[in-house]
Amino acid sequence: MAKDPNLPLLYSDDGDGFIVIAHRGASAYYPENTMPAFEGAVAMNAEMIELDVLMSKDGVPVVFHDLSLDNHTDGNGYVPEYTLSELKKLDSGSWFSKNYAGQQIPTLEEVLQFAAGKIALNIEIKTEAVSDIIDGGVEQKSLELVKQYGMEEHVLFSSFDYRVIKHLKKLDPTIPVALLYNKHQSKNQLPHQQVREFSADAFNCSFRQFSKKWARDLREHGIPHFIYTVNSKRKMKKLIKSGVTGIFTNKPDVLHQVKDRF
Image (cartoon, rainbow, N blue to C red; front, side):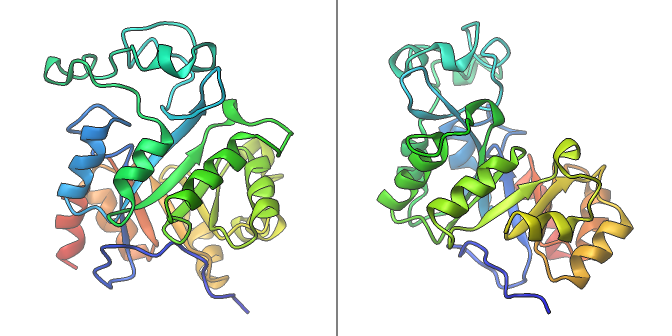
């Protein structure tokens, strides 16, 4: 018998049982993982924002996707080689458009400050930030910040590194955590077997990985599942019809249009 889903509460829930998630913010229109992308997601009525967390050299959780700084800033090298003050000197907007010149890499704390009382978050902990140590690790620091801003009921953590799920559940068994499908760690198990083994609350995977077999397995076991990253209306329609819990998209405005036609 399936247990009741342990999912974050939405601040703006239209009650349809489906969640519109802005992938790295409204990243089709703004530089990803920046404050304008997050503000844009709220303006487009996204119900949740997905963001990525790495750690600075001095141990501060920062919001950035790639380990390398080369593509999305005017810096080079790797995020963990820079202190927070050094990362803050980098321009993380010009690569997208000169209109966003001077945008800084946000800290997780800055995003939580913005999101509190406004929009739920899916915080993806990047593998490069994870170690075997729980005390003082990225999971503990991120969780403490979430609680500091009263967001513990409005956050879903996720990671491709299954250690994150174990660590977070050890730190706080009530915190909602999604397992981001990792082929190498999955042991060829069905989604419900992986979720059960790691005491996860939800299952996230790519639309390319999501099969009819997986859809049936997740549905039969009552497991919430979120599919990334879908920007085409045709794929959105197909996934919504299949009964997915939510979709990650760079275009939350488009997903809203598609969803509202159902």
